[in-house]
Amino acid sequence: MIDKELLDILACPACKADVKLEGDKIVCVKCLRRYPVRDDIPIMLIDEAELPPGSGKASRP
Image 1 (cartoon, one colour):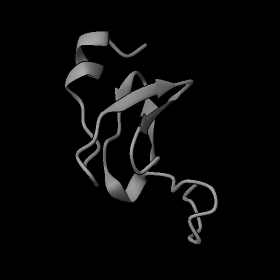
Image 2 (image 1 turned 90 degrees about the vertical axis):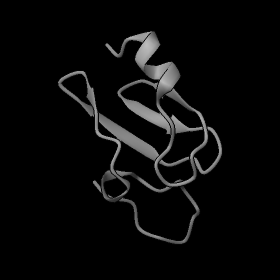
Image 3 (image 1 turned 90 degrees about the horizontal axis):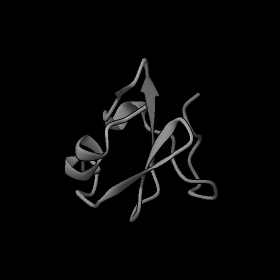
């Protein structure tokens, strides 16, 4: 589980917007990229992010 204090200071590395936790992903509230969380560690790398549905680009597994 991601600590609330950590979640409050995280920002999307792509657009710098706030993020929120949805299940096992950290989701940007602006660009909707979804960043994985592995072993309770957010992987906030643009290359690891899943793009939002309908973006016209394939999402990463």
